[in-house]
Length: 200
Image (cartoon, rainbow, N blue to C red; front, side):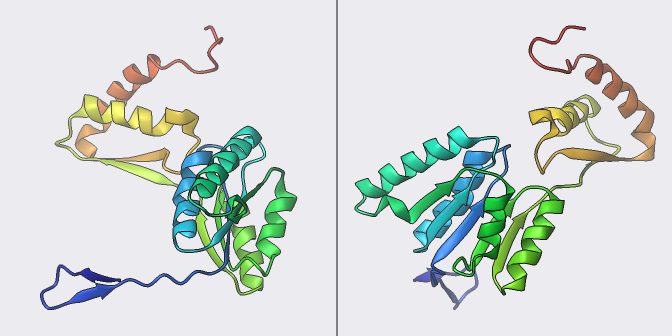
């Protein structure tokens, strides 16, 4: 299709080139969202999808597979063009090694992502990797410190820190170092650690 461009006297052309089968391997922390980002694009572009959900979220894997199959069939497409497997590393390894799967999308740790990438590249396949983060927040001297500190708290401990966008470090202007530390101490004192039944 032809798409207008923001540049005068130019257009952009979009072409979809289905690869056949796309392998999607997702992590435990956002199993539905990451699946959607990968599988929907693959399906819309004319590919079949083989999904390996996290071994700790098998019920989500089963439920999502049934929902997607139902939607596909209601739209006169075979539900089997979206297939899922529950299990551990052996299934992920099989997907990474399978030459019938030209593209593998992996979301998870850097350590495992490197193994997936090496395995897929050994067979000249393509790989999309969404891996661990090492994210910083920069706080300048004109920042609203109480607001910044509350934002840092959520960025660091929201979802128990189990996401690739978790804040791991702060970069502070020298003039606000002590003020930020004092505010952070007060905010973190209010934060309750542990499970819902945890008592101090």
